[in-house]
Length: 368
Image 1 (cartoon, rainbow, N blue to C red):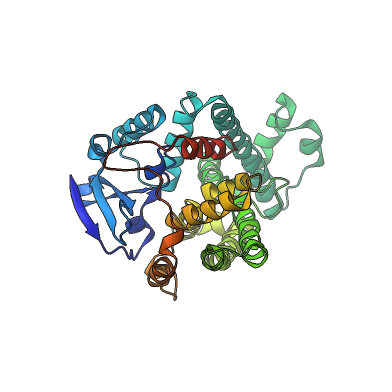
Image 2 (spheres, rainbow, N blue to C red):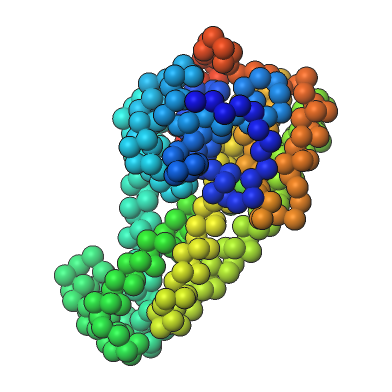
C-alpha cells in the first residue's frame, strides 16, 4: 500500500505525474502516474517534515487519508478511467466539481470552463477552415458575410472546402477529418491570431504574473519565506522560457497548414507532441497562480504561509526538460527554511484543516 519515502527526481513528465486538484489539504496537487504493471499510483510529498516522497497505490489512498466527499468522488472517477495525463485529469476534475461537491461557486466555475472549452473548440475549427482556404487562395467574403453557423454559410463552406481538398490533392472527407484532428489538438493551446487565447496560452500568461508577484513580494515583505518566494519565481521563469519556445514552434507549424496537411503523418505527430508538452509544462500551475491571487486578500502572515504551501507542490521540471537540477535546489531551500513550513493536516489522525480546505475551494471557484 505504502512504498515508503523515496528520493524524487523524475526524468520525464510522465514519471513526474499529473497534478490532481483534491480539496483535502494533504492531497492537494499530489500527482498521479502509471506505475508498475500500468497501475495508477499517487505521489504524496512530505507526510512528515522529512524530505521524501511517498508512493501510494492509487486505490489505497482513501484507506490512508480522511478525504472530503469531493475527493472520494474524484478519486473514483480517476480509478474508473485510469486517467493519468493532464487532459484526462482536468476533465475528471471538472466533472467532479460540476456536481457541487466543492461548493456552488466551484460548480459554476467548472460548468463555465466546460462551456468555454466547447466555445474554444468551435472558434478554433472555424479559424482553421479560414486558414486552409487562405492557404489555397480561396478566401470568400460571401462566406464570412453569411456566417458559418447559417445554412447559406455552411453551403458555401462545403463548396470551398471541396475545392480546397482538390487543390491539396486529397479527398474532401479526409480534409475534414484532418481538420477536426488539428482543431482538437490546437484548441487548448489556441491559435496565434485567435481573438481569444487558448487555455494553455492564458495559463502561460498567468504564470508570468505569478513570477512577477513572487519577485515583488520577496522584495517588499521581509520574511523567512522570502527566499522561498524567490525560488518559486526562478522555477516559474524557467518554465516560462521553455513554454515560450514550445508555443512559438507550435504556432509556426500550425500556421503552415498547407504543408501540415500534405506531410500529415510526420507533421501532425510533431504538432500533437508540442501541444502535449505545453500541457505537461503547465500542469499544476493553474492552482498555484490561482492560490496566489486568492492570497492577495490575506494579511502578510497568511501570504507567507501560502508561499510555503505552494513551495511544497511546486511543479519542478524533470531532468530531461531542464539543464538545471531544480530538485536538488529545492532540497537546499527546504533545509534552510524548514522552520517556516507548516503542516496542513495531521496525517496520522486524519484531522482536517478546515480553513485550508476553504482556501482550496476558493481556488477551485476560479475558472480552471
